[in-house]
Length: 385
Image (cartoon, rainbow, N blue to C red; front, top):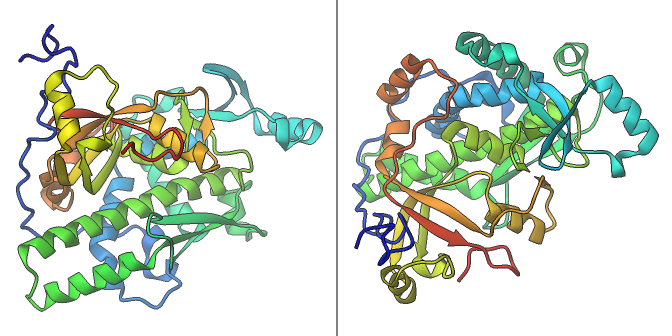
């Protein structure tokens, strides 16, 4: 049965390797030796912790934030041209003085949303953009504090604005900004501490090593996501009506925007789902519908979800969370299976040496092994069951 033929109308999905791909177990610990950026230095943490437990994750987060895609996002959202959002169209370019004047006259409640676009001079100049992004991260380091907190099971972390005046040095770089505090689930630290202790004692099994790498990756991604929100706090202050759009993106959510700029989508690890979670009304062929009916398992999968995502949009709106939207998106997303070995690549110095030589502002190239369609529950915003 060939995808896209009359007997298989669902194109690349039903016959893809999404459900049949066999991952190879991760068996090599992180060998990252790069410097940890000041943003994640020990003095940024308010809790009493064993900092060494976090170092592999912090080295990875530092590499991700130094990537070309992250550099493009950072420079756009801090230095980029500002435009009003007019539906799906690019609105008029404005200055902060005009924005402040209009806010005073019409009030924040009916004020139009904003979008930021990369200035023309940065498009082709990788070195210039990378240097400016490094300066932004350096200047941001004294605008963020990090802590651990007891959070609900489905919450990895969150950040909040810390209102109050800034000192003269910070005001030089962030004249409109406020500081922010990032909270990460305390259970993440305890898991890292337990597994790292076993690793130091030489007691870690292969399965536990895989779990350690996935937990280190999850912690790194949580920090990267919250840095996305903290950048907006520093650049614009406490944004009461939502964060600015990144260029022409249909959704505005600083954390996911930054993740997608780095990976070209939302990379999520350690997912266990069945085909019952996937869309049942997307023109799938008989073979695919049978997989849905049987509820075939995909265990501990690494996936890449396209961004902007209709499921995330619906989930935020259902939970009354803030997310800027230019339009309503489909409740069905395309999700790609990513080899688990890609996590091993991310924790390898060799991988990042190759990336540095690529000299590009593009997202990292994420290998995929087949696609599937995932739908949202219209009542709860969660994946359909």
